[in-house]
Image (cartoon, rainbow, N blue to C red; front, side, top):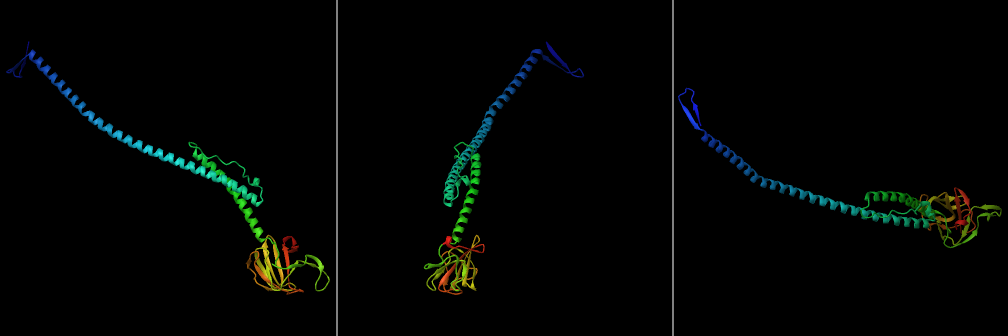
Length: 292
């Protein structure tokens, strides 16, 4: 079978044999298949290197992230261990504070139960325990102890101040009691009179000493008393030292227990060298003997 192709004017014509067309079609199909196969082969041959390169970079990134995560975990664990040790140390200190508080309360003569030092201290946090909870518990514990110790400190401070400023002892280093507090015969007139203090006789110009710490509120010559010194000790207590030969302090001076404040004399209404010693509570003379 032949295929004839005529030109438009009918002059020229081409004649094709049917078998030749089959061969040409087969060759075209074969070439198309070859080109498709070559494209696929080239694509598959070039893909593995690209994929391998992409996988390599991805693996490197994952390793870097893993290293960073490991460092973060290690730092977190180390931080938790530090917090745990710090919590345990602070709780041990709180226990020691409890013991110290009870000891100080005993020294102060205060019932430790009033400050509730018997409360059990928190147990140190174990590994793996909630450190934040342990720190909160410790914070509450310390907050509970601090005001109690502050209260004890105040009590002790007041006791120390009171001890330093409470009159105690004699106003002379050497001497003897020549007249007591209370009713007596006036040594100058012989009439009954009330004696507001205790008299200590001794050597003329011997030291007169303060029986407690305080502030000098009077150092002058006064009728009846002669040269007199008065010291305010706080808490409503004051002491007077009269008939001095000479006052050695002035008003406003601060003195400590045992300081020499005057020299024994016989000024004012006096029959001999002695110190007229008074203790006054809120301005009223009281018997000095309990303070001697």
